[in-house]
Image (cartoon, rainbow, N blue to C red):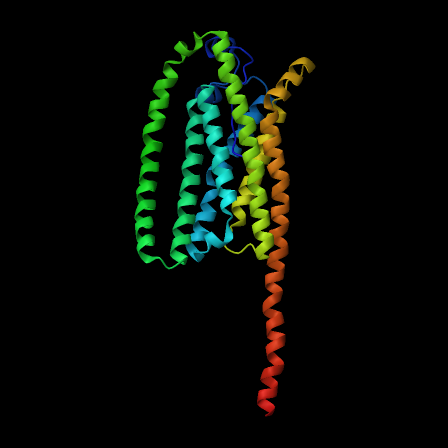
Length: 303
């Protein structure tokens, strides 16, 4: 579950919030424009940033493992990858529609770019392992071009988003009904994203069960995702308001992301169990083969 650090000022505009934020933490205000005045909120933000780092680097170990063994098409489920990118796309749409901060939108764009790179690598090795040399070369060129495009977008889009952030005052002048519609659309995107993230694990669990193996899959992909979901969920819990009336509103407002983060964390426990179980089985197989071959060698020597 990639993090969606939506602003939750409860109808307090950024301009009003700026006037109210007197004793806030300066670096958090400049980076996230969020007013943090107590220790609980401070650690909520810090842990939330840790979750972003975990998600940013989650796909890199898988890319490396796939490059090493070239079996990513046999190891990863296509359903897992499609659900994952579906979740990150709805994450990005939700951030954009609700006019979130540039750092949130930039990280959402980065997630989508990483997903497409992973899917491109999957398609490349799928064709390569089918011995279609010409298609493999064409796809390799496409993947290189796509990576360069992603890097370009990651450089250009943040500057555009910063300019967009400066014109935020025009957005604040919109009617309450329009803002309500946009917020509701972002909230719906949150639920859709939650369903995508939860659904992504089942195809991969089934794929591992079919193969009785996790070879070609990096456990760090899921370990970092578990750390990211755990820290993200914890950051939301730490920021829960003390007042009971506000706590209920806060809980309902964050419900899809709480379900998504802790739900995926729960499913990744089963993924961890598969890694442990199947790797133990793979270690036993060579010893069993050696026991079967040894009597045959002894018989040949006696004859």
